[in-house]
Image (tube, rainbow, N blue to C red; front, side, top):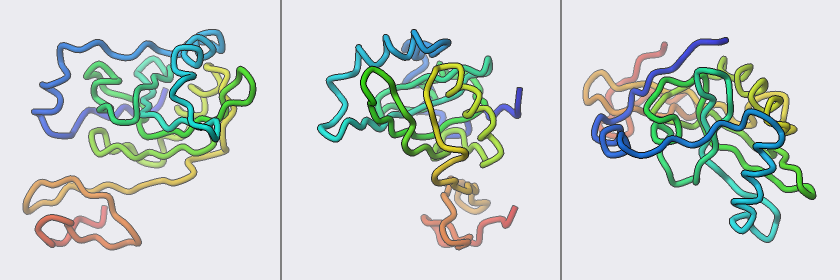
Length: 166
């Protein structure tokens, strides 16, 4: 498999979800069909649903409500990838219309894409050839805040200190 990403977000968030169940892995297209049936009511009129996702250490996709924490979706375990995915229904089939690595709890880099591609394939979900938006993360050395770097602007959004370039 690829590189694993440990949870690096706030300890209190990890602790708050520690006793909760993790999401079930989508090991096959059949599992994905079952997931769609369970959550079909949450797809909007446009046929789309944005969800939190992780690719677990075994390479399987796990989906959860968009407002849930990645660490809860992963059961507190390290992941191969994490982010958000917008699924569109085409009949009984899901297509990943948009997919990002946006997870400040795990901060996966863009190199995590191959794990996502493999997990989508296993789950029978057609997807793009890469992240539709890939984010860069940096932890501030001054205040400890995790930041998403936008437009190569390496400045902490909390304390305005310079962020490390790498």
